Length: 248
Image (cartoon, rainbow, N blue to C red; front, top):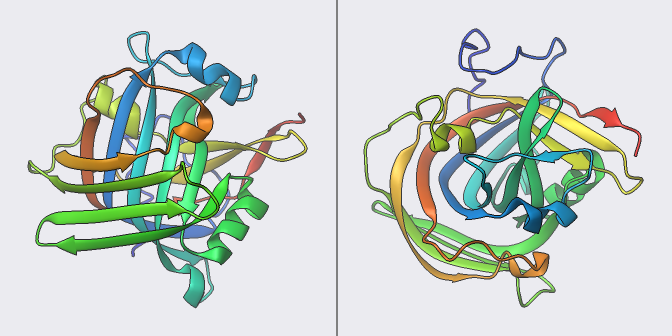
């Protein structure tokens, strides 16, 4: 896990924050599985202050399994929350000049990470039993949310091409090159969290999805198409503290 290069910013759509970053993360063995979905299906699930972002008239929803390493700035790693698998369900939104990510759910094995994500980042984290392993080029990933029979994911996936950074203007670039997240507190306040990393080292991917009910709790259904798949072996990410963007 390394600090990303803060001098390499030409790929960013806006400047780095002036304040210091507070968290460092490494995301690895990551699969982007995306489906197109009508924006009106997502509208009831997203705060009205956020515009649902679209590409060629379509919104997109993603299921993203990966593994994570995490460290607080100037602090040693916390044994129970420094390395764990995570699975998130997301879409893409805009607020002012910021285009970012809205998370419908984030499942993780670490009890402390779930508590911290909910408490300090106002993100909808859930505890899950996740088994993630790698055999040769294959990643095997199975997630089962505690207390739910309809929020599970089971897949085997791998990369199928060399690294091919996404071209600006492409759908792949639009889906992945996002440098902030949005969240909402229980009081209804909307927050923005800035992040920084190098351009995504994307590879084409294939996956055998043996089970996916992660969208069932949302009551939404993407278009009946095969998912658009991308793989990323590893990326280092810096995160900044949340800032409030609305009073709710």
